Length: 156
Image (tube, rainbow, N blue to C red; front, side, top):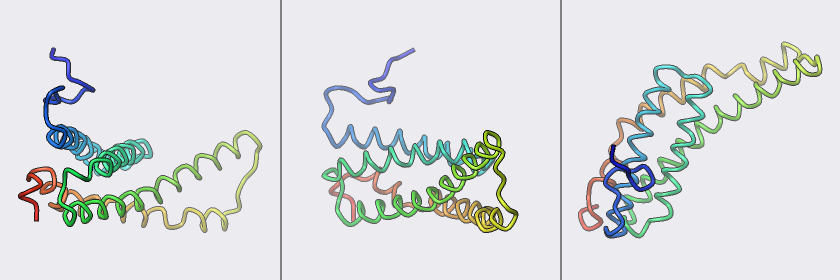
């Protein structure tokens, strides 16, 4: 089995910076699509968490190498990623709160009132549907694909 630098196929030591960045981002984007499909199939806490991690890694890599991309397309793609991270972050925050409250109940026999639970978690299904819709929009959107496909000179 071939060994890849940092586990990324086609990433070699002596390639131009921007080419290496695109190879890295394409690899990370494939991971996002894999995680996205996993979440759409099963919207578990773990699948959302894994997707959020991969999105964050992709976005931070993109931000660090903005010199490899035309400004207008880069910023459009970045805004899309930020929005998606915000939406997913809301769902993740709710998952963490729920887990912490469950642990508090188990360890200290503290129970929340039904009214409090309704206020905290009443919109969880709506939030999950919103996350699913945003992910489907993201998957169908071409900004990231165009950004990764075209060279800096070809980008509009």
